[in-house]
Image (cartoon, rainbow, N blue to C red):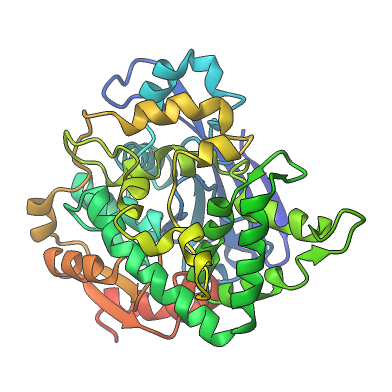
Length: 433
């Protein structure tokens, strides 16, 4: 039974769907999906078209909005919106260190997790669509990884789509994870340089913290082992519109005097563990590189291997001179599963996933080249998380796809300026722009 309730200006309804764990075995084991239906209070009784929102990630449940926040207010002017927790996230039969042992040991867990990529998510959406809309196609809004899923949707089930809107999420159709990270590290260098140019005082602050971590073992209050490599990974903040400013505030007053000498303050440690922990989204770490896997080549800890091709990211080497500490972001490494207590029990599972060679394609270039679904995509210039050149190449490969390339926003443009971004892209799908 669906439960409906109210927030300011909206009516919310909890919805649950039963779907096969393995869509190749529809009569086998099932899992439950959760989604939140949202409709404007003054339109609750109207027959409205549907918009499905696919969250970025992988591994994150859908946004928990209050009322008509961000882009949702614009969408509710004409749509009934479904905020889906993709399989394994949020309330949708979550996968984490507590639940995965129910599957068995690491080998069984790794096999299980191969079913949590974009192809399975799209097939989940199609089953949900038939129940929600009665079979009518819906519009999909895909943010970041949600955009990757949307391109898979256009490949596997375009008949389910009335239109598709993608923000910061046009993937390469054929790049291996190695290609993705070879493009990513130079972007990270540019973003780091821009941050230090904006806040030159952070050069010495970051160097001092890194030097402290090279000389001391630091365990954060939640049990996270803070290494210098983990500290460098805070560069992931630089992909957001406010990220550079947030990083600057984080680095301020990192140290306090103690009887044993300077130490990282409790306040700093409390903040940093919130940025580094995967407790709330472990699938991000587990299947992150697998979202780029489409053939018999293993990902084999691609981000770690490719990092070795960029020796400037070595912290110890950087600290021997007087230059700035390089930062990283949007990468998962073997040491991630050593540092984070939420991931340590899943370390062997992660290694098995990294070694797999039985990945299947996520995109159909021929079908995309013949696409008839109206599609519009926001491409953020020099996006930290998704390579702009890869996105533009894919845009040219999808028939009829219209782009809005902008440097007004970072990767989180949908959050920072949601109504404007969504309005612009919806207009592009209707040839109104």
